[in-house]
Amino acid sequence: MLEDSWIETLGWVIGAICSLSMMFGGVVPYIPQYLHIRRSENPEGFSLYVCLVLLLANSLRILFWFGHWFELPLLFQSIVMNVAMMMMISLCVSIRNRGQLGHNREHVFTDFDYDHFWEWTDFQSYVEFMLTFSTMGCLLMYVFIDSPLFVETIGFISVLTEALLAAPQFYRNFITKSTFGMSRQMVYMWFFGDTFKTLYFWFREAPMQFFVCGCLQICIDIAVLAQCFLYRKKNSHLIN
Image (cartoon, rainbow, N blue to C red):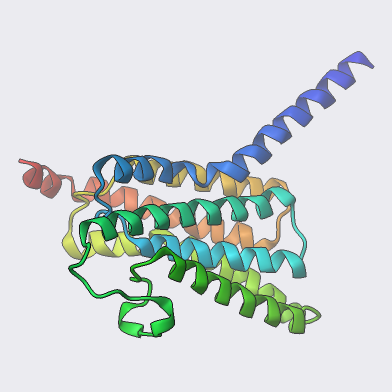
């Protein structure tokens, strides 16, 4: 009896650790990037489109939860990631504005200028866009929540968008035939994090979209890591 109780407690502790890792582990790869930008006051090496992809993917996942309930740690993970990405945007916009004070024309969301989409000069515009996107998403989910096809499509688009996060990096490396300037540490963290996340989806019986797109994410991570090996000679030449 005592042994069974000990095993049950151990299982609960392991489950709690896995859940906490799932909730907060996704933002870990971006902490070094945030600290580097804050220390160097140079955000040019980081693309805000990474934030856009993650904000859209996680906002759609939150909407998906209302139509197809899944584990709360996965829901909280999306909320934590959205907060982290908004913090990253706030930092980058603040530093860029200090460096370009009085030199460039302001661009805001309410200009509705496609040429400067996601290149706005004030943080409020990013907040306004996400509020608009979320409001439209909520209205559509409210109207079509009884449609399994619509709900499952939202879930699939959400995880597919996140799964393709590393695709632009792979494409850039392929075009330049180099991984110079890319943080291998970040890619390693992507790979191990995505592997853990996909296994979590499998063992916790998350919706199938999560597991399938998790596998796709791992494949893209491996492809980017393979580029580090394939282009290592050119990287050495650029460093020298």
